[in-house]
Length: 136
Image (cartoon, rainbow, N blue to C red; front, side, top):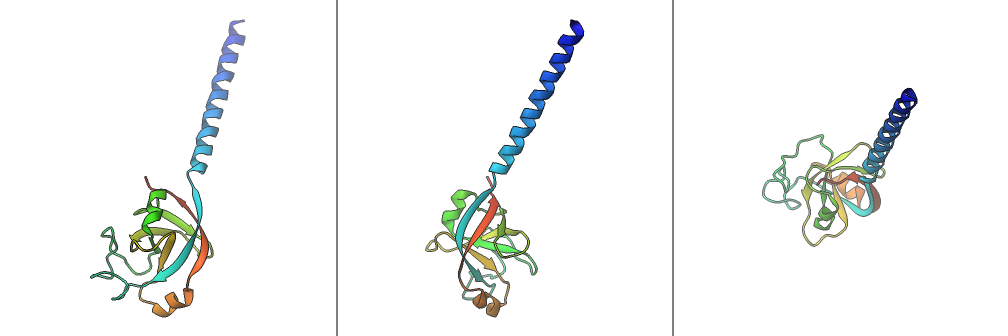
């Protein structure tokens, strides 16, 4: 009788542990968000940025080779703030939010294309899906 009770207690604890791990895994997946946004491109050149074209809105210094985006300020309330990691439909890799756009833009991301103005113009404006984990 004692062995049976001990065995049942152990099985019960294992079931609780499995359920807890399963719930935590589900919660982690739910933290990822998906949205459709307008996507444009920008460059680190005078006329497209502030005084220092290599320093972004949160004082991050942009460096060649980085995958960076700017976001419209309305997207910040969704967790797209400095350091958020973003996957962009049609582009390889993961981009990091490092810049923010002028208040006049809404529901938009701006893909940083360093100094390549021709590439940015060729990119144009698109509606794309993004997937990201919000920064708290």
